Length: 124
Image 1 (cartoon, one colour):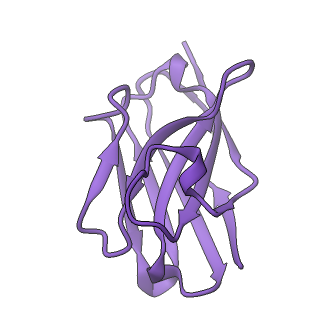
Image 2: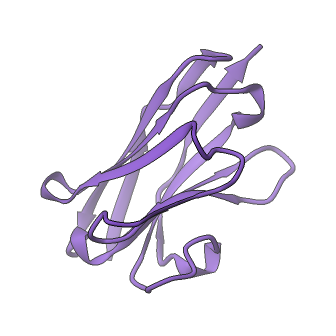
């Protein structure tokens, strides 16, 4: 089992920045690829970003490419999502997730464990 807890969400204005954190406990964190997803009201959960277990490879949704950066620190079992130039359409609950599989990082089906989520609201 892997337990995940997100933090860092909040209410910001368009153009601001936020950094989300996801702290992991349980099984060996460095064995898992990590992803960030988000879900807005009335919409399906969508992929935002992912990072391989080593941190060498990262993946981004087109909608956040160039604005968001995913990173991880295996020593403290934490993954981050730095979000810059936030837009109102970034408003959603953000979830981190852990995957023991190799590849398929954009699909929710790839991930074994999920955090409870943290709300990000971007006002105009």
